Length: 77
Image 1: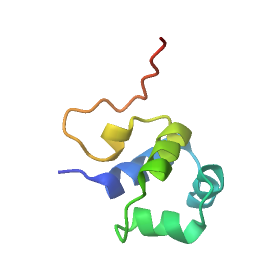
Image 2: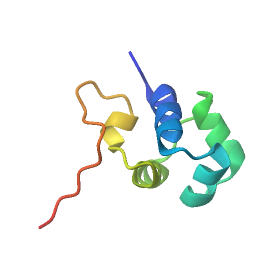
Image 3: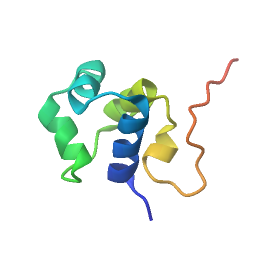
Image 4: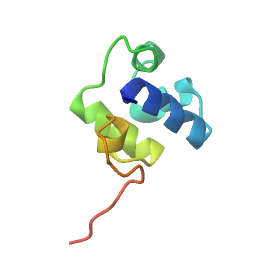
């Protein structure tokens, strides 16, 4: 099964940004992003939300939930 680490790496590559750029846009240190991409830790909920927003993917897909859509869906009320 594909998990967070693999999906994060894929989404960063698809977006065409570096880990350093993701760190800056999410508001965290580069070492934390490095830890996420190497499976040493997972982001807290607020960081996960920011990562998904920056990379334009759904949080569920990013976390490796089977059947989750990759594209971020915005709901308008």
